[in-house]
Image (cartoon, rainbow, N blue to C red):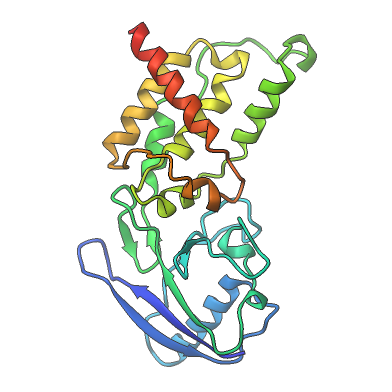
Length: 250
């Protein structure tokens, strides 16, 4: 398979980026998208050119570090693949002769470090602002001794699956990280252990979200459409309710 790649190249945060075009032959349809980028970098290295910088870690769809925008869609979307991570997108989803555009996450809260690599430490700061349980809960007890409503338990688990990849930010026209923030707030806010810090958590995390430069949610829904874990838009509604209640209590 032969493909044409249009890839964003940028030396660092201070320099202006640009799109560069590469022709790549010998691509197997069994390759993952990242393996295809590895092949490109082998070609560039052989030509004494700078390889394309991109993030990856597990390459198993677990960590989300691999996130890039492919043909305008965060993490990319193939003919049969939907809501996936970039590393789990395979070249069989493309056709011989295709032109593929690859860009980094683009948002104020995610400054580009180099090429396709962005600084996602803003997510760490949001977690540091309240995405944890610090109240002493004693030693571990039998799980069944803390009854949790089945609906709440399922909803908490669904939101706990968020991997913090940032696709929601990349897809949102406003560059909002509300889906990520709401997943963390909802996960802990529905569990008994999360109640002592319930109100300070939502206030702190939303404040950190806004301070990082992320935009506001306007319920467009692009975030949940590309989320690899399918975090529902209703989580943002819950975050808004929690924030309203917290503001009334302070």
